[in-house]
Image (cartoon, rainbow, N blue to C red; front, side):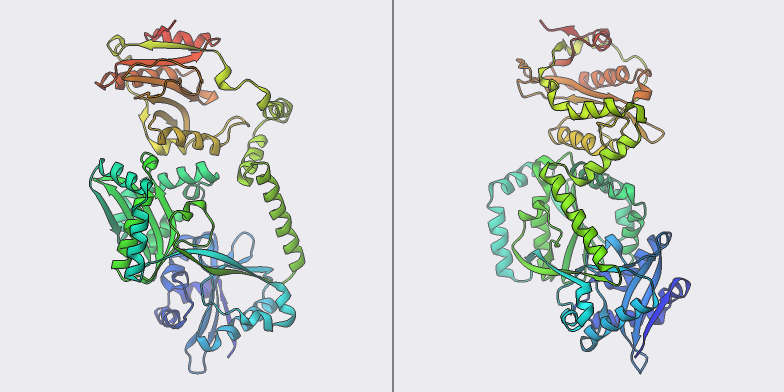
Length: 554
C-alpha cells in the first residue's frame, strides 16, 4: 500500500471531491485519536480562509480495496515553500488519521516518503491529541534522534460525571470572589448564556468580540491576532458551516455582552480556544461566571471533558479541576542539529529577557520602533530610555489643580468631534516615538477602562490622533497619576490624561475633547464639581484650561 503525495491544484480538486470528503469523514470517525482539527470541515474551512497564503498538500494511503486508511493534511507556505500541518496556528491539535491497525506504520511510511520526495526540513505536530501512537519513534533507529517528543500538562474539567460536576460547581461557587462576580453582574441585568449556532447569529456581534479580544491580547502580550491576521475572522465564520464544530457561547447581562468563549467541539470534548472579556466589565470577572455556566451547559449537553488546552496560562489555574498530559512532536528531516541549536538559543534569549522582566514581544516592538526613528536621533532616544529611571516620576512633578462647577461650563463651541468609549479606536493607535509601544499604550488604557474611566477619541485615516480621559466619580483623595493629595468633594469628576499624535497637535483636538467632556458632564446630575490638573510649567495647557472656565485651586 503506497503513500500518495498530492499537492497544489490536484489537492485543491481533491478537497472539493464529494467522494474523497466522504472517505475522509469515515476515516476521521474511525480514528480513535482524531481531534476535530483533523475533520474535513475544519481543514477545508482553513484552506478556504488561507488560500492566499497556503496551498494544500495531501499525504494519503489506500487499502487494496480502495478505502482511505491513512491521511495527513499538510499545506505549503506560498512564500517560503515550507510544509506545515494544515490548520497552522488555528489548530490546537495536529496529528495524522489512520486506523488503529496502521496508526504507526502509516506515519513511518509517510515521513519516509516526505523525506525522499520533498525538501521539507522539519514538521511540527503541536499538540498531539491524547492517544496518538508514538511507539514507532523508539523503533525507528536512526530517525529517533531526529524526532523530538515533549510531554506537556493539560488542564481539564471533567464534565461527564454528575457527582463530580456538582462537587466542582459547589466548590467554585462557594468562593467569595465568584459570589461577588455573580452579584455584581446581576445588577446590570439578568444573566444568560447564549449559544451561537450559525454565522448569521455571530456576524452582528463578531466585530465587537474581535475588538474585546485584540484589546485584551494586545495589552497583555502585544499580539493583535485579528488585526495581524485578516483571514482569522472569515475562518471562524466558515467553521460555522459545519454544525457543532465551532462552539461559541456569549454571556450577557440583559442585552449587554460581558464575555464570550470560543472552542472546537466534537460533541464530547470541548477545547477552549478564545476566551473574550469585555474591558468595561472585566473588574467583575465575568469569565469566572461564564466558565461555571458553561460547565453546567456542557454537562447537560452530554460532554465528557472541558479541555482548557495545554498552552499554559495563569488565567486557567482558577478553573482547572485536574490534569492529564499531551505531547508535542517535531520531526527533523535534515539539519536537525542546526534546528535544535536555534531553538535552544531562542529559549535562552527568552529566559534572559524575562529574567530582566522584559517580554520578548515587547523587546521586538521596541526595536521596531527604533527603526522608525532617524539614525541621527538614536543617541538621544537611547539616552531617554536608558536613564528613564533617573528622571523624576510623574508623581514628583509639580501640577496645578483647577476646578469648575457644572453651572459655569460655557456653551459648546462647535460640533461634537469625538467618540466616547469606542474601543476599536484604541486599536488604531500607532506609536510615533520610540519609547511608547502599542502594548504599553493599550495596557495603560485597559487599566483605566477597567477602573471605570471613560475616554474620548478621534481617528483620522485609520489612525488614532487624539485621546482624552474622564473620571466621572472620583473616589480617591489622591489626584490621578500625580500622587498629590486633594480633598475631593462628593460628586467630583476629573479630567486627566490626554495624547495627541505629533502631526495633529495644531488642530485643537484637546480643546474639542475638553469641550465635549464638559458638555457630557453637565448632563450628569450626580456631578457637582469638575477638576483637572496640568503641569505648572505648561503655560499653553494652562491657557486652554482657563479658557474653558477652570479656576486655579489655591
